[in-house]
Length: 116
Image (cartoon, rainbow, N blue to C red; front, side, top):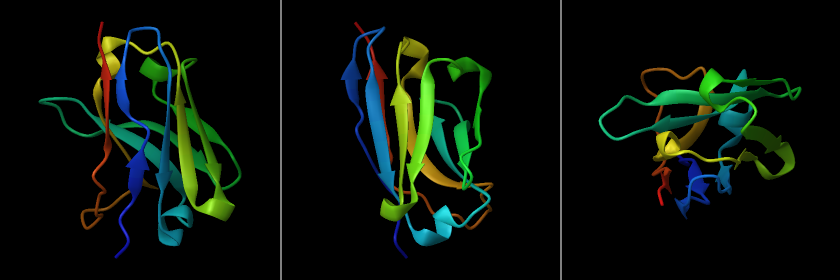
């Protein structure tokens, strides 16, 4: 099974920007939506943003106005443009289908650290 491959994370100062990318399987891109999730230290994995095949997007309140999700179905790639980053955005970021089930497999994720 091909796992999602996330990339683009790194260390950035507060107020900075990063652009994440994730290459995923066609099965994920055939789901109701493709999503970005994140898992902060000591916390459970949580939804960040979703995008449907028609381009409809949804964001959790904490990232609205700062993050932008997009997708390129020809490349099976989903992106997350993150601007005005804050220390609370520090987490490992993952992409996957939305919704996901108990047998869903996850990639390695990409670490985002926001710190001065």
